Length: 340
Ligand SMILES: Nc1ncnc2c1ncn2[C@@H]1O[C@H](COP(=O)(O)OP(=O)(O)OP(=O)(O)O)[C@@H](O)[C@H]1O
Ligand SMILES: [Mg+2]
Image (cartoon, rainbow, N blue to C red; front, side, top):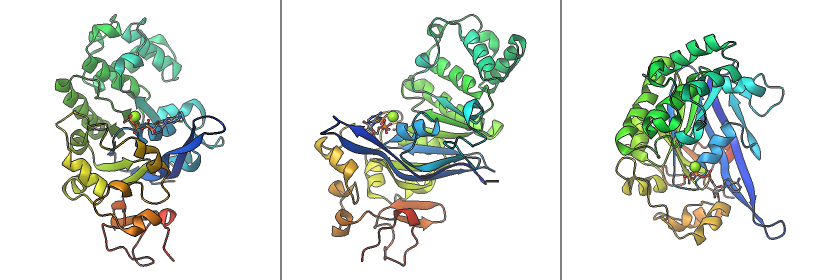
């Protein structure tokens, strides 16, 4: 039995972009290693600016994209192995998504209660309409709502914040162990965002649900999460306990993000960098951040930096956080490219 609820092991996803002849490869997710413990529910925030690979990572976890290489395990089962016990519909009893736009989650032509009943029936959680009503009522209670508040209403009769709360209830119907929420508050009124973020904390504490919270917003990430993974051009450049990352960034990119930390909910400027750099950065064989790093050394442009383990729970894809010495510093094997 695995002691991980979730494990991304050396996961890479490349996309082919452009035409067949002149096309090229873009590595949207690049050798990512992340895990969540099984015995203790936790919230992992995945933070990074636009195009860093966050949604691709979420889609891999939801089995909407297959990794080009590497493996994803849920409770020790490889989710892309057809022999896995989690193959097929049962998978969605473990993992549920929450999307950015709650209005796209629901059908505009169906009342919200009917939509929720159908979800319970389709997932096989309830065998009859009566049982579905009980399951839905319970899921709504978990998010602080009474079924009477949704009965007979269509999605457009709710605010974005209310509907997102209901979509969290939808995700809870199969009582998943893990929720993947991709920018769940970015389309909600700023005044209602904290309601949803606090709801995630309650779900973790009261119902033992772990959560992957994908966001541009470092401030809510800090508030809600136990761990933060900072992504840059497909790489997890820094990972660790959220308070340590926020108070003592190890990677120069994290420092840059902290310097430009927005007020709650405000996205970072999408163009912190000239766009022509983007593809070159995705494809860089060495450090993708080298061109804008204030601490860049010749080695950063020559050899991909290793995953340096800073403490038991902290790592950064960078030569700088420790006095990196090839062969001496503890690094994670898959990223090692030790200079001759
Ligand atoms: N199906 C696809 N085909 C080709 N390229 C893709 C595909 N999906 C994503 N990409 C590219 O992969 C990179 C990562 O995209 P992704 O959507 O994962 O980023 P993100 O971090 O979620 O960004 P955002 O914050 O804007 O949502 C981008 O350069 C994107 O254009
Ligand atoms: Mg995205």
